[in-house]
Image (cartoon, rainbow, N blue to C red; front, top):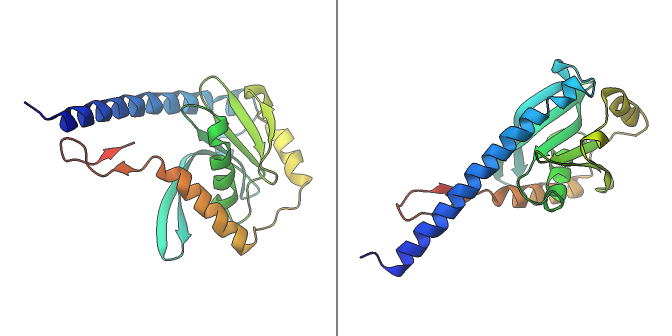
Length: 187
């Protein structure tokens, strides 16, 4: 008979695996919904990069992070999109940090979305400027937003703080050291 600890650990791992599967399904649905950028928002296929991975160097450490979608204009990230399972408000700071770290100059707009909703954020202030898919700027609106702003790199000390914030949120999806079967479990 398995001891109580192993039974409990198996139940927890089963719940985590179920949440991971649901989160992946949700992220897949959101990426599919992002087709609205092309169909309804006027973006061109060459404006959009999907599943973008990037390196974050913090001190002696180098870690990979990612964004679900990046919209480029004039060779720089103009809008970044992160798909989130659960509360969007709990991921707003995450996507803002990613927008500030991803490119040599921060992307001006960040979006966090799930299949049902979206929150559009001003990266400079970190504040929500719209909710719902209708609030995601069209290509022309985004171009106008960019032209109205001075785009400059973050100060080194602020960039370091943003990297720490980004990596802290990314760590939430880190590995549980070992599951009941001795294998690492991705959450």
